[in-house]
Amino acid sequence: MKALIIGGGGFVGRYLAEHLLQDCGWETIVTKLPKETVEVEGCEAYNLDILDKDAVEALLVRHKPDAILHLAAQSSVAYSWKNPQLTADINIHGCLNVLDAVRDIPDYSPKILLIGSGEEYGILPANTSLVSETTPVHPANPYAITKMAQNLFGALYAKAYEMHVMMVRAFNHVGPRQLPQFVVSDFCKQVAEIMAGKREPVMRVGNLTAARDFTDVRDVVRAYSLLIEHGKSGEVYNVGSGRAIVIQEILDRIIAHSGKEITVEVDPAKLRPVEVPVIRADISKLQADTGWQPEIPLEQTIAETLEYWKQH
Ligand code: A2R
Ligand code: GDD
Image (cartoon, rainbow, N blue to C red; front, side, top):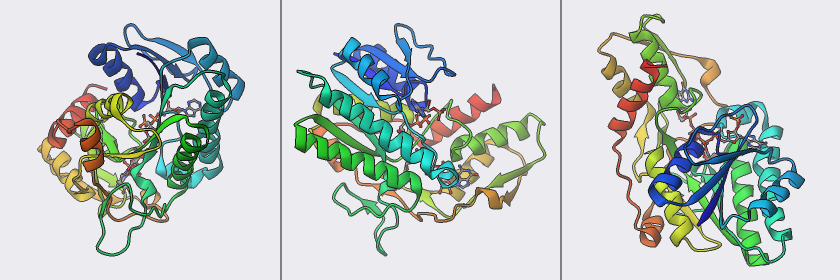
């Protein structure tokens, strides 16, 4: 198996490259942006902007990977409110560049995995929080709309052109090295700075009432390789833990690790114009088709993420 990770310089991409090479034994190449470095032993990295369709096609013609795992994205919900156009360009047009390049290359039919989001489900009817792949989507932010569009194109291309495209709806993934624009990393970084005396014992937070479904990034990348092996073309798969945890509880757990008295202040700049209250994944389809199980408890992920920030 020769795999290509597009967006290999991002948070998930590096874990995925390590997993495919070391655990799966697949030949693995990645694309990254010029500003990024990917230091994974045995992994060739190529610069690629997915908005450059010719470059996307040239790379695919040159390497003809058996599997394409498309991770490149503007991945921040918060930033998508500030720059919806850029988010749409990267997440929709960028993905179309990949799909069209594959469609246009003669006698080439790789397996393609598109990474959408649990945010696609959006605001649910009252008394609903557990979402399966058949639950209607009501995306409630620009990022979620772009991921819904990306996955609709994936399903369309699978049907129209008999391409082997699979779509993921990934719920929140966390772990060491995640950028501090995401909540667990953000809180761990602030607590690590307080513990090191680099910051007053005051944390600045956003909305603590929402509940999200968190999975360790190392479990997430195992789901992706299993989907490449066993997933069905044209299908959508939730990738999450099946449990929702309120952000306040995440905060309390992270603060508890510090052993310090810490004051919490809401930063209005961290609040979003619309917030999805609860998102929790029904993962039975993924489990039935691949046998996947999440293995790393959230407590361990939090401890390791905090440790990462204590050292950086
Ligand atoms: O936004 P940056 O500068 O951090 O770079 C991101 C990169 N990227 C691009 N790559 C190629 N061409 C572009 N025009 C382009 N624009 C952005 O894709 C970053 O290195 C990578 C995405 O990785 P992260 O932002 O770290 O996301 P993460 O958490 O690894 O999520 C992977 C996938 C994404 O599709 C998310 O939307 C989904 O899972 O949740
Ligand atoms: N970032 C951040 N910072 N979020 C906060 C904070 C804070 O200080 N305080 C509360 N939150 C809340 C957000 O309002 C949201 O309800 C929740 O914490 C998670 O926010 P993020 O970690 O920024 O992630 P996200 O849920 O918006 O998006 C992530 O998960 C999606 C899948 O559900 C990203 O990884 C997306 O790429 C991914 O698709």
